[in-house]
Length: 490
Image (cartoon, rainbow, N blue to C red):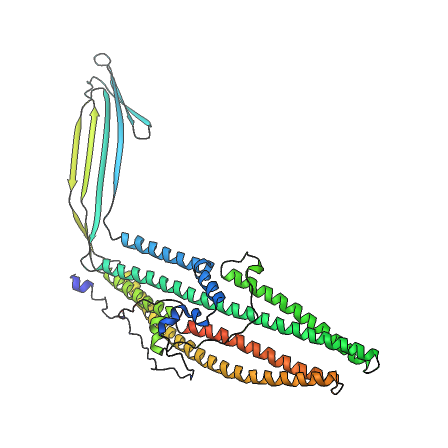
């Protein structure tokens, strides 16, 4: 059977090309900061002008358990690559041995048995002996000791006629690159999680400050009502109602203090400082406005998103592995040179040197069905990698588009809520003065306060949501790392 016939089942078809088409611009109508280049996404947290945020994120990128674990995976991938490629280098081990042989002889009379005893001592010092005898014969081997020392070095090296080494190197390099992109994706998610947790902790601090202010107002009203009821100016039921409001406000303060402590502890653990006291992480009761993202296009996510880059090199790895599986159908040629040395001393001396140069060839015949099945399986896995890449690109575009739209809606919502808070505060202040003058009843005053507090709480939540959404948007746009140049498609 000819070589062409043996290889007839090896399809030359490649993996399908990914079908990805992105629009030239995002549909969301969010004005970006055109003065900022896309490189501003590399360290997007600097756009907030927040020293605490910058310190926490950059500390987490180095000391967080997630980041440290991810970088160890890169080291593991590099070691695996070196181990794989080492199998294509010349193989061989140096072997050595040492042996001591003792020979003893004894003679009887003529026609009486003569015998000899031979003992051998190896490198381990173990003696083994054998006794031989014959009748009416002379013993020919002289008595004495022999020491034998031997060494040999045999080498096997595959001659790469069909490109197996190059295919294995492409697959190994792609696997290392994929782990590198996975590391960058982990860091990107970590930066977003740190920012989100810090913003939420600040939101709890703002809500706690509002709750404490509500408690102070409730206590002031309760005390004023007690005085008024003592002078017979108001009913005692009003005083009881205000005492209920005081107890409710106290309970809300306790709840927010607890969730605030838990949020700070979570943030410390996230950045790798989980055992430090909470006093080491003060959180201000502020909710700043999120910055505008730099000017980017949908095509930038193909270069900037680490998950997209990882999916791309997964295709490269699958393609190289497929090529390697196909090459298994071709014959293998190996060079097998060798060298042996043996030296004997003692009763007699000798030195023996042997060198060899040889070659062998292996052609898969009966193993062919298994190899063809492996090729089909790898071809399917390669197509799955292509589909996964297409899905990753679509998800990346979805995340960016939704993030831009959400942040734009957050800004509109905050502006409207801020107007509502201002008007509700004005109404409460007016009702409070009227109540002090006896012109407004308690029910009207409490309702005005409740409206103001509820609107302010909703505004705080919206402000924190906008900050969290902005951090999520920066991640969706491919922030928190410096992407390397792209390569041609596999």
